[in-house]
Image 1 (cartoon, helix red, strand yellow):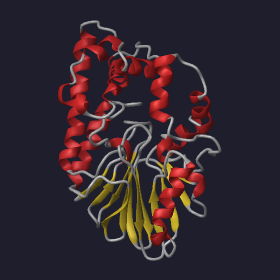
Image 2 (tube, helix red, strand yellow):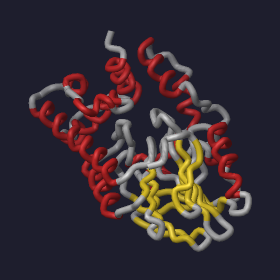
Image 3 (spheres, helix red, strand yellow):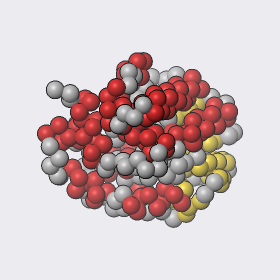
Length: 312
């Protein structure tokens, strides 16, 4: 695999990945597929400055093959907050993702960052999201939605869009270039970083990993982290299965979700970036196991992660 360096890498004939190490909170990947006189962009980035830097890096391609299509793989801001800089393109995502974007406007995140949630939580939020600028961002514009599967033609290149959510979020989409053996997975894959299960069910996410493996792509571009292969997909799938097993055992024993997250020995997964996301992932499992489980709010979950990272 190519080195995990920031910037644009050609991964196929006219197909590019844009990578942002280290792949932690907000440092997402994107992609570009160029055809005859037109290009498709896969995702924008977390703020306008980062997205503009990416577009500048792509200009050598897009000056002659302008972006006519933008696909957002899901609703998290690090994959769509730069949409306003893509003018003159049709913006496509799943119907579920479009609805979720409306519920999570950029102004909400900007307001959250200005609030006081206590020393540890504020520290964690600033370390996670402080590098990004959320002011001046318009809610993502979406022109076309779909459910299930659809295909688009970009300058003679066939690109399949496959909805596999709800999993990471409500409407996760895979972007598959079948004639190139390349797939952009959005946040179905975090490589060398910890997946975060905002929605679930986790069984859907595991099935999505199996689907990616079955496509036998030669290049797999995750939502976060370096380029990968089937082994990387299996590692994500195995982590998810591990969380389900460990959380289910503690749920059966009557242990509260927050205590379970602290109790689980992550083993090999403790070396993954953002390992403390186990707090959110365990809470999601508990919600799947018991409809009566009352999940805390997002800020409380961030506070739980902060307690894991800063235990003293």
